[in-house]
Image 1 (spheres, rainbow, N blue to C red):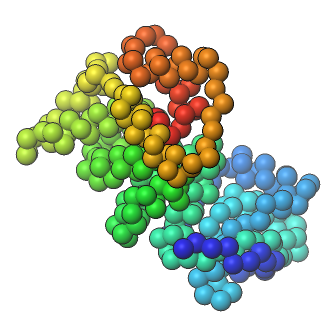
Image 2 (image 1 turned 135 degrees about the vertical axis):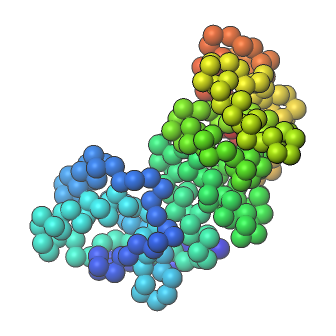
Length: 268
């Protein structure tokens, strides 16, 4: 179990990077520059998160852009930030990898594909689906879909999904077609689905959410968050009803995005 052991003030040279606990995305140079200016002006307002694998052996878990900014500062101004504030956590490697993902995914630019490898890894490490979902603040249905479709996902589909050229909903549709294909026909089925996408054709009818699925997902959410509340407008309710009715209107995508934002436990 991941636990915060203490908050500390440690030498910067003791903060190392573990080969299996990395930033989920390449460092963004503009973001590093922003942190560099902010840290010089205001100090390190948010401590780095480090994993103490052994006594006084620290590996970075959260704060990759901030650490890169501090290293830039030190290169330009020797003697600055010889020591840094850290939050020291402990846990097993797979738990630390999950925490690393969670800290990165809490940023606004996280993609669903950023979760894939870690969720599959945790499942292979015998984490129950409920535990994975709770740790990542996701629904069990969302995690189950990843475990159902990702291991056999065509690499081309995954690349399109990660590049924001394909929605998760359409990626699942393709995966369902491949899973239903006769033995030996999987690649040909994936080829046909991808060709349909290139031609602008529908992969198959899209059923984003049904009342039965919505009820099931909300029940699961209430089990883990019994005090959860929603503040909604009439427009929010209209969007939800439109999605449940599968209305293929010109603004269907707008309604779906509104429902996803207001009711995150209902829609992937």
